[in-house]
Image (tube, rainbow, N blue to C red):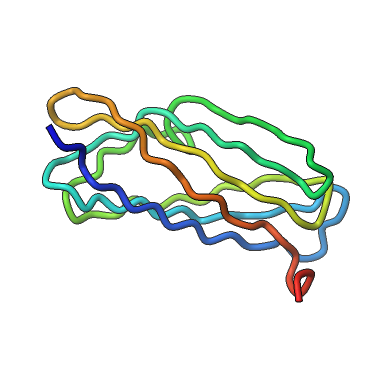
Length: 120
């Protein structure tokens, strides 16, 4: 059985006026392009700062929820992460489950966390 298609769109931003650590917010949109409802069960993030320090974060759901996402619908949530440097990268994956109970992984492509105008 083909897995549902999931589109993940990250929208990172910097919280101005914060240093040591630098605080970043990220809005994540998870769109279900598949034919059936899916449930987000688990998250895994790998966060790397500009010094190469890696931090892995994983756990059930996102922001305390394990949302059901119907076909054509988008679930959005916002969270944040502190970094010791003004630049970093996040990537990861979600484990979702389709209506038949089959679990599958939806990768989250790397995206940049950076204070504005640091990369010219």
